[in-house]
Image (cartoon, rainbow over all chains, first blue to last red; front, side, top):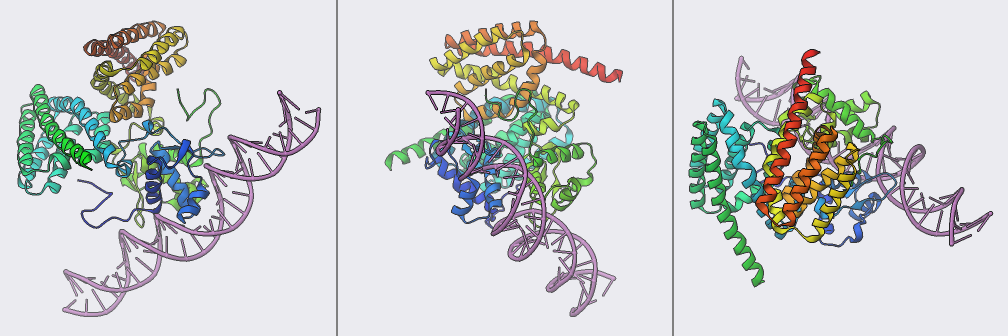
Length: 247
Length: 247
DNA sequence: TGTCATCAGCTTATAGGACAAGTTGGACAT
DNA sequence: ATGTCCAACTTGTCCTATAAGCTGATGACA
């Protein structure tokens, strides 16, 4: 799996613009910055003790996430949070856990709509090479049931392989965009060892439907897999809410 | 509708980095840049006669579209085109029309999967304010059937309003990301005046199901609307292909 | 001859200063 | 009260310089 952003244990040092963007976003989320008025390049540069180049790139990052609008002459404005790019790995990292929890539910709803159909589409056109890679993924998952962190990577790659087999760049891109949230989601659903065994069984069922080139079978198997995940997610959400009430 | 990127007739002058990024992308697509080796900041700066700051921002834009990878010390590399962000308005603009045509088909497939369910979800929880805005949209569409360009904006806003009513930030974001492609798609499906009348009728049916808070009715109405669009898209694709063969 | 450490030369990351170009709001004249 | 114009502020672009990080080639050593 290509990760690119983070290595296993060594904490990757992010560039200054990314760090400053994280600070600013947190400040915006917390409501510290009122009425959509974001700090200018100079203000950022002075406040964080960075050069104007860095301040500038910071704003460009926030603009690329649709968090702010930037235009020459006008000062930077904060956009309504409904328009932010909640699929971006960066933004997700900067959000408070309550919001991420809600997003996970919403992500799951999206997966329920898309993934069964992706599996069906894949079943109709899957190649032998893809099947071989899926087979290999299954073997690795079976071997990694004791290591949730390694497991979720193979898990994710398994789903992405199916997505690619469906041969639709738009849907592929959507699922790819959701990789960060997907990983967060799997971190929850793949917590218990029993859940991992169940997941491998689910994946095997999906794989067999693909081998049989059976679209409706693949759709059903994927639906079942997602339903299982849903149960796990709901349980976790209950726990989190109870913990929040106690506080 | 908020457009922000482009005004009606005055051709908005893009910033230098955006222009250079467009040039570079076209060059990459055409295969002029072999084996993933992108030009460095200095090379861009010399070749296009821009400062290094601009060259740098150019690469940052391409990186944000997952077209290239940028890291300190290493030279910039072009990523496989399967990983590019085909939902980005910028990238779509820079792609050749054949590819955009294919993407439109794939986009439609996505809409078929998502929009009927979004309509159903919206029917379950739609507010009176949203219904009022939809009603207003219908009236404007009825009045704009002679002006396809103005019509498609209201059309798009109508669909986005339903999406927002479904109350799922992830799905909302996905549909919002597709706005540029969606506009391109509507430019085709809303070509003929008869198609506009049909679209208004379809939209009215959807609206009425929402007023009735009838999820399955809304789902069915949206399905029907998309099926109509699909016919129009397929016809257009046929024409384009025939034209390509004649050439 | 093969292996490995080192380093020169490339790349991007950051800094500071300067000017151009566009926007906004207030001062000023009518 | 109103409309014009300008000054101040903001982003866009340029230049130059230095720090930090990677890559490949060179050369020492086994």
